[in-house]
Length: 388
Image (cartoon, rainbow, N blue to C red; front, side, top):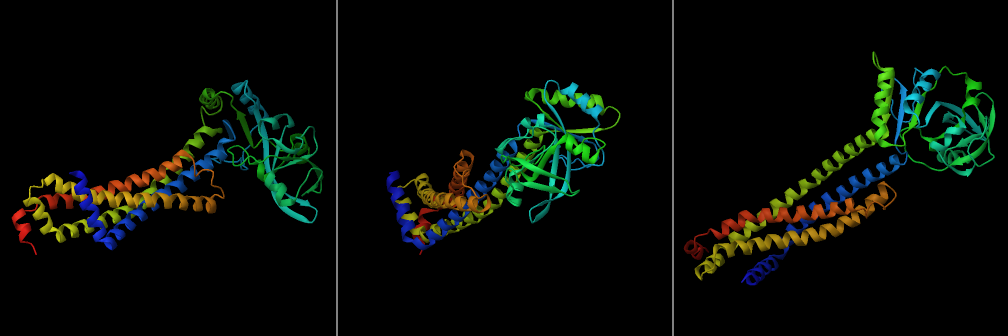
């Protein structure tokens, strides 16, 4: 019997094909909006997380300035003293503690001139932060390492000569492997020089930041507590930021953005639901006499409801499947244009956005069909037969 009512429902949709197509288009647009926006938001989250997580777990310690410059070691007015560095070594032992200077300078390479960030580190500490793609890492008090983007900008190669603002010159001994965004330093956008070379040149009063590479994640909180106990009991002297804490905050923010954009896409599904409700109500009105005949020959109210729910379900299924297929293509194009890569499109969490959009489409169609189905099943058979 269910098959009979399914066929009746299908026949009615075919009989009002144009109206049915408009309802399907509404579902397609809604599913497309939810799924493609979900794919974009999820891909952005995965992209940023992947780039930032390459740094590993680290603690970045900077002088307290009240502004909380936690990213990339921006220059601050206060400095970290050598004595404070020794205290940090005792707190963090046996994890490596890496003090560094952070500044910027004008450089000349051949006919090119520009301003770049400069980090000054002990050559023994470089192994914890960067890798060489070409050439070697620093081994003494001379030479310079070039980040991947700086090397591209100035066409630097191993052996290239770099002139600094004070007229001094050094040769590039290595080009760094691209590392992406980080919480500690941004080597892709900088030059790295030996710490002694920088101290002889600038005679700085203290370090700009200290990076602690934590081998055991369970020690992060203990080290931060040790820093607060040693330096921040009376007033805040040093600020420390864990890469895992910052990464978690960023993931939360992107997840909220993704949820918000998905909700915006959901508005179009609400409009589609209203369209289906309108189509179904028109169908009930047009088929009042037909419903009366069915009821007069013994058709149950539940079977009348079933027939109209079948119609809504078919509209939802067709629209959701088409919307899901189109959203995959839209997600591909959006990922290619915004992120220049489609590697996150096939991630399970991205594909789940398509399933989520299709699910919403089907549920919206069913909910939109409930009231028309209820109204049709509760028509008075005698009055329905008299309907013209």
